[in-house]
Amino acid sequence: MKKFLQVLLLALLAGVLIGCSNNDSADEGAPDENTTNEESASEDTDGEDSAYPLTITDAIDNEVTLEEEPERIVSLMPSNTEITFALGQGDKVVGVSDNDTYPEEVLDIDKVGGMEFNVEVIISLDPDVVLAHESLVASSQEALDQLEGADIEVFTVADATDVDTTYETIDNIGQVVGAEEEAEQLVTDMQADFAELEEITSEVAEEDRQSVFFEISPSPEIYTAGQNTFLDELLQIIHADNAAGDQEGWVEMDPEAIIELNPEVIISTYGSYVEDPIGEVTSRDGFDTVDAVANERIYDVDSDTVSRPGPRLVDGAKEIAEAVYPELFDEE
Image (cartoon, rainbow, N blue to C red; front, side):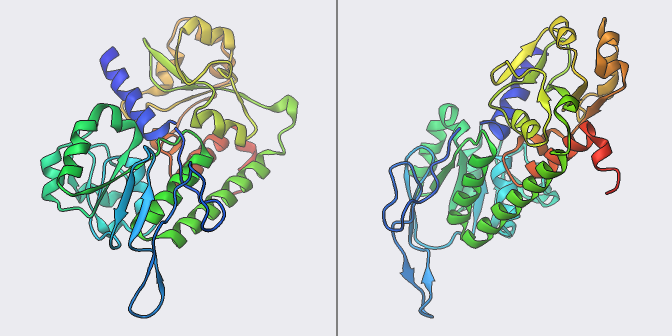
């Protein structure tokens, strides 16, 4: 069980959590050392500007050069895949990880492995670019080197840890796959949706702010989200308090400590593999004294939408907000 939970948390951290991206250009023609930039451009036969050839610096400071717009893309991380599809480039994706579940089209795309991907399968797919992920580098450097040795361009996407860095990774992937305008629009739409959600929940008076405890895994090893996680940031956006806000990152919590925190709302994210997540909480000794249990305020939300750094974070935030402050959304 402990090994299973460790793998689960690793997957969450890889798809959800956190890192910094070097993606934005500074003044035109003068990018700083921590930004992604286009170093070359050409004009197409119609005289219009083209982004290619493109030289761009990835999350691990490797310069990646693409002579032409990629037509065949392999994605090694579900968040990369979701962003690519959201940018309207899903028809170019020829390989995805075993952990990809969204959108539905990925179920019919060739799989290239999980945290340990199959180099031979990737090479056989003849990709123009592989969208790797910063969280994979430490454990997969040899495999990534093999791909580069096979003359396959590998662009490593930053391990985003917050919403702003997610915007940067969207811009990054947009540059790589030839969808810069779509990436800009997607970020604008997300910002607008988050702003609307924040405005709706701003009606909550300070004394009515709810204390929320997230459960990322069930007992006997209960993990929660502290500071510097997407879940903590989403709570801030919807004007709620993180019951475990004095913790850092992803931490294991003792049941007695949870009882002492006495959260007003408990939200689990493991309903996809636990048959009765609400019963998992209410059946624990001593939890009948917890406000969330006594007032029947226990909910389960989709793990992917609240953890993967991509467009669906907005959906995850709204799902949480509707659970915590249902009265604000009754009229919708």
